[in-house]
Amino acid sequence: MVQPREVTVPSVVVIGVSGSGKSTVAARLAARLGREFVEGDEFHPAENVAKMSAGIPLTDEDRLPWLGALAGVLAERAASGIPVVLSCSALRRRYREILRAGDPSLVLIHVHGTAEVLRNRIEARRDHFMPPNLLESQLASMEPLAQDEPGVTVSVVGSPDEVFERAVAALAGLRSVRTG
Picture 1 (spheres, rainbow, N blue to C red):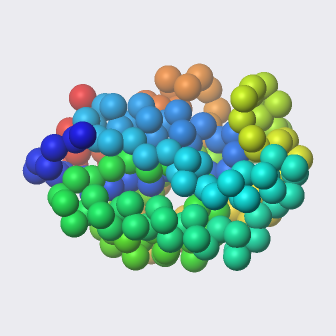
Picture 2 (cartoon, rainbow, N blue to C red):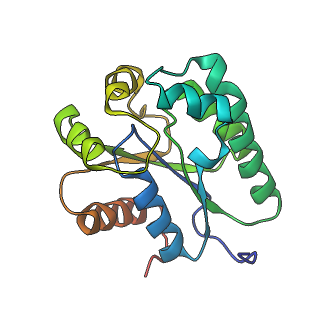
């Protein structure tokens, strides 16, 4: 378990559609910052995973309990003074506001790419419940970060190392943070 310590950056949520590399970036960022990594997909109820595995897009009603659980994790860690790095699609601003209710100081990193790049990544994956045919519905739902949302957008083009280093640099530019 990560111990409370002085924090220069609050909890970070890495957002994006399926295939964007949000889990990879979030896990590596958590390791770099010495924080707990929280994989948002692990909090989906079995019904959500079954729907997505069957190629059925989730509705807002499907997502609300999942987002509430993630907001609860963020609130619990914030109350303990332990910032985390969470991966979560958080496609819409209202979803991000639910997460922010758990920790109002969190910052966002949106990993973003073209439909073609993302589709190629999803098709190359193995052992993941999200089928390629759900990408279009996610892209249609994805709302870019608004000017008043504390966060940055990072391109997914390039190797995982390049994307990760761009995310670290963007985060460091957003807030003063020791990332190395």
